[in-house]
Image 1: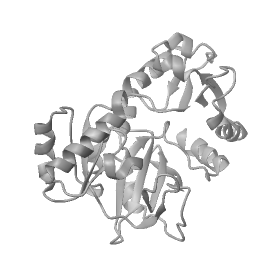
Image 2: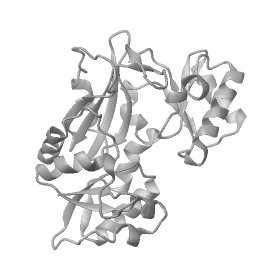
Image 3: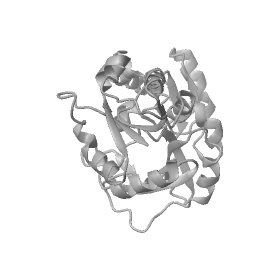
Image 4: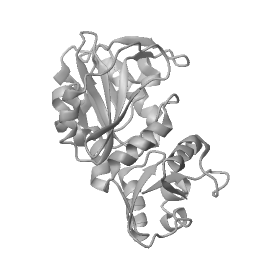
Length: 296
């Protein structure tokens, strides 16, 4: 099994520094690794991006651990590696299934906040969509990301029926996302979650959230989502999440879950496990050992 990391933008013969510790753990656990150029890949220069990948004699399973890619960029990476006899663990369809919330929403609908979405960014469509939430508080994001660190200006809408507030928050969100906007807008019911602490830089309220990595429908590791705050003895109740995971169309994915103020547990979102980050305090050796046991 081979891990595919991004190289350093300053020197294509060394790994991106943010993944150095992960690479050490992967090697310790018996993984091979190769480097690709993220910049060349996202510029569409696939052959150049993969020029240092040595083709194995026999087909090899690959796992990409790097920066987030659009579905089209991931497809180019997948196809390019396949030509070099390396098959990434998730197909392009599986990558998109967990990368875009609308694609996986029906699979997690029973345990996630009410959501709707649009690729039409005109005011009439947006106001009609948010009317489905009545006077409830909502948040706005795109198909992948929010502007949660700009909480009041570009994420949180206290009352979905307040058209002026909806317009100002959406406008600011679109301004901040700019050319990085993923497909369109998603509106989600705001849920009161159990408070953890305030973010040390943005002041955003942090809540008791966890990131669960799944490989082949089995749990690899459960991490505290935030590196700040005291989680105490709180741990997610996993049975319902494991059951839902059996129907997710992906071999390696994350499920971010959170505890509501009333004690219930919900799914915040899914993500492709190849581009999901590990917390700073993660035991990387344990993660890669567990990944090796469950990914094959």
